[in-house]
Image (cartoon, rainbow, N blue to C red; front, side, top):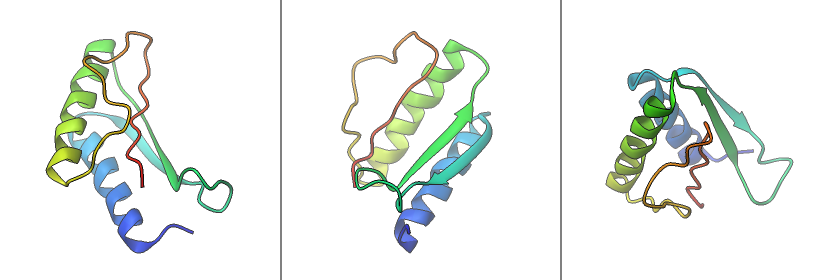
Length: 88
């Protein structure tokens, strides 16, 4: 089960995505099923440009919270989805 700090951060990220016009963000707690992740946050965006914008803004939001994105790269991939690994 996710600890309270992780639950709070996941909720803040989901709200951040909503505030940036992401649709239907869902926090999925996988902590009891795997040792390598506490949760996934899944949301829908409207276009590749929207995905790029939300992802780059999310990287900044996480940096402000002192969280290092482990798989950050120069640009968002063009395949229509993005994984942002926040580590632990």
